[in-house]
Length: 93
Image (cartoon, rainbow, N blue to C red; front, side):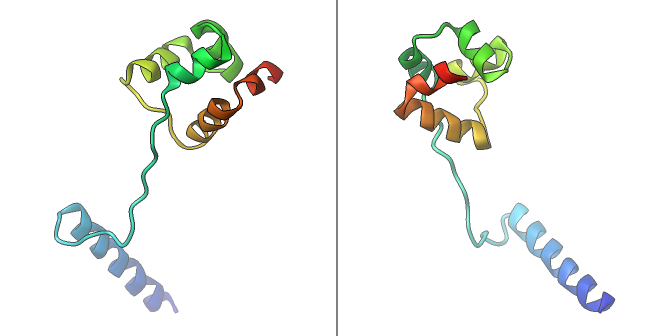
């Protein structure tokens, strides 16, 4: 059983290295369309400070998102998509 686990792990690591080195293609890729944070914030009618406070993030993080210096990830992207469709939801927070 341990040898089988080791063989599976070793195979997976070798496949990962081949992908990283460009010798193989990944079986699937995931991507997220980055929402326009500045446009979404403007729909809420909140200032950067107010919006950042509602999201419990620093205003600098929000500025970086709005300027395209950094991008939100994971659950934040989902939240932004939701706020894009229903900007009044942030008033409930």
